[in-house]
Image (cartoon, rainbow, N blue to C red; front, side, top):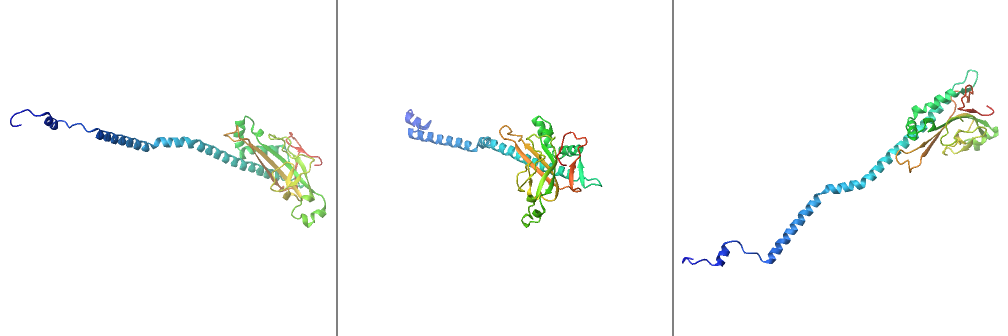
Length: 277
């Protein structure tokens, strides 16, 4: 004051540091601080998308890999099917184009001709070598290729002139095996067409069999038949996925002859000539 008396403690406190806040204000301030902290944490958690993506990728990766491996095997199977068909049709064309001598209508092939066309598989279907190496065996032990010549002999003329058999001549002819390859590898069991057993007619869309011929092939003349069978083993999952057999047959009439017979000269056992031919 003006009279020089000392200041009171109350006035000194008002002019110095602010007095302490009541408890309710302090609690409110603390609550606001907690809210602000939780909001910041939530914002950081929401923005941390890298961990969520990693978890999603880890969950989806096995499915993606399964689809990838399965897709590659499906493609390999389709390619193998096409190549087996190519082998059957190509070899049938080689054999059916045999030319007879000028004095005969019957053409002949020998063991060398059969081996040459058989070995053409390495060019037509090179995958068979890769697959054989993976399984630890020779390529010719990994595929079954069988040849046969079939001659049709009429049962009776009346049957052929019957209108009921105009579209299906199988009741009118016997299909006899002229010669067959008994000396080629048979990795999946005997698949050659046996001698002395007439072939039986079957529907055109039936599964190829060494004992049957499609009904539409019956008629006057003869056929060259090539039967190819290959067991496709998946590269991935072969331990629990069984091999799938791919079997295809080609039926071709001789182009320049009435019949393609087998010349047994220097035969190494690759083929057998049937009785009566």
